[in-house]
Image 1 (cartoon, one colour):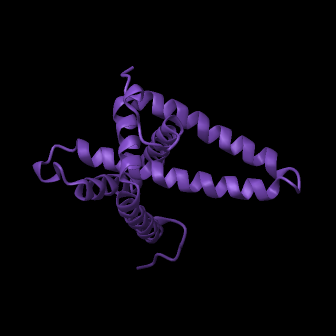
Image 2 (spheres, rainbow, N blue to C red; image 1 turned 90 degrees about the vertical axis):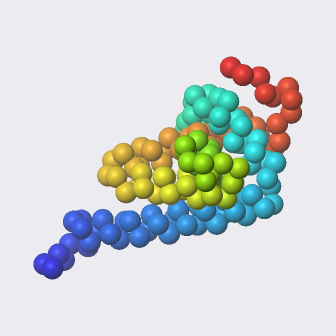
Length: 171
């Protein structure tokens, strides 16, 4: 009852949890839209994550660092600022799409019979796991960064296109 510290303690944790729940609800809704309008591309991302998770995280981590560096370089000049803004918007969208693919794979990997062959439920389960992980101080941030890197890497590896038979080489 005596909690007045808005940035810490239980009240701060509750505010963070509500914000995280809103972000993950948005992630789920965007996932539904991606399933409806680009199911083949989402499937290509999912297959890339399943077949090459370590490669996806490595390429994604390098991609995130490269995006940050390129944004800073572009933002140094007045002419580059509009390009930097566009790059940030594209990177944020790619991060969300990558998280959607990662959540979908995570949900599909869960050992529950009710999730089998139910992509919407798989997305919901995977998004729920990411949400619950986000509530754990320290670990939640690391888990989110890894999930973003994996998804971002899958986008770079597939260049957001459906996979061809030749792309299905197992490493």
